[in-house]
Image (tube, rainbow, N blue to C red; front, side, top):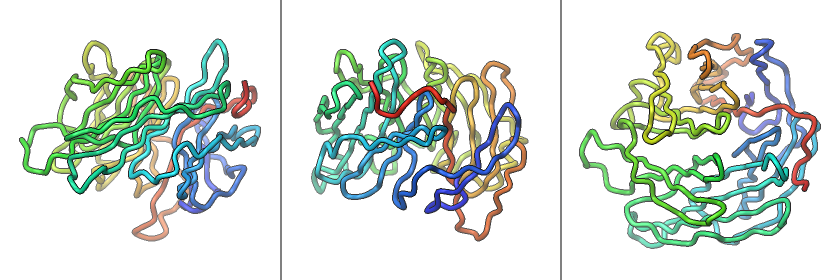
Amino acid sequence: MYKESQNSEGLAYDPLARKWHNFVLPFTLPTAGPVAAFGGLVCFAENSDDYMLYLCNLMTRKLAKLPGPYEQCRSDYYAVSLNIDRVSKVQSIVVARSSRSSNDYSEWSFSVDTCSSHSQTWKNVVNTVLYGWRGGETSVICNGIFYCVRHSTAMVGNRHDECRLGLFYFDLQMEKLEIGTLPMPCPLTCVKLINCNGHLIMVGGIGKADVVRGIGIWELQAEWKEISRMPHKFFRGFGELDDVFSSSGADDLIYIHAYGSPQLLLFNIKQQSWRWSQKCPMVKKHPLHLFTGFCFQPSLHVAPWSN
């Protein structure tokens, strides 16, 4: 978790030792932030005109700049996912981009580009125009499928109980894009997608009209199956929660925190248990002080962007 959004200094929480440790990123990129993590690596995006991507092992402090840029034009929304093949160890990056293609807000261009440590070049695999939907900034790769959250571009005024979110599915091997028709389990203000040991997990803010009334966790099976719903005593512990919040995870642990508070809540999928982390030493300095956190699996055995 960062102390300041434009600072490389932060704190790292160890869920086994239940301790916070001072942690400094091995590089300083004033406009860069974490966008994906998998298997000991973290992908950072430099939010410049070129939107450059970097892979880093935060434990060995090795950094690799990815080939690019794959596209010269600036996009409105980016969704980035990272994957490492268990057998070949090839590292792959998938980037979905969305931009308004006309003055009509309901019409958006949507493209998907892939690159791997084996090919070392970008390949455009999807380039289409969407009507009524746009791509978002949340995505994940799970069992060879790239999942990306989509947002309705319909003007506010639809049925109050209708969820304005959905999913895109892209099969990385077949290179086929599908617009998922499986409905969301309930109206959601925002969602986060997490790959937990090969299971697609969704953390969502339950509510309507951008007001979060609760937080739920679901697993994608034949339909969305609810795993747990945050007990009200923990939900109240966040204080006033915006319509969006931060969530990430790995293995059996899911982390949730509000952008306006350093409090960190953990959910253990296997144990079906909720608990707060040890109190974070960070202090909120002013009303607009925001906290940004991400989850990664520490490893000494993987080098960024290597075959």
